[in-house]
Length: 97
Image 1: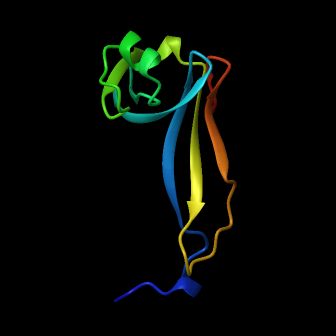
Image 2: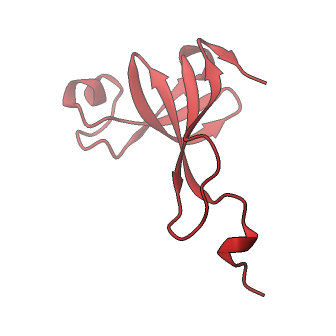
């Protein structure tokens, strides 16, 4: 049985981002003690972290080196969007509850 838009309280896409070295980067995976981040396309930054120059490679960063982690939520067309656009999971180096 399909779910209809009027049966949904809120629907959205989620992407996870991290603040690392003052930059907002997309999180591309996680491991027990850290996260894989995608480069930002800046050749100098990417080279420093051993990636190609297209921002398509990921590099690993220990959790303790990441300042903030958050969800960016964007609405799904045709469904209600009744939530915050940005939800922080970690701020100033500390995980939120």
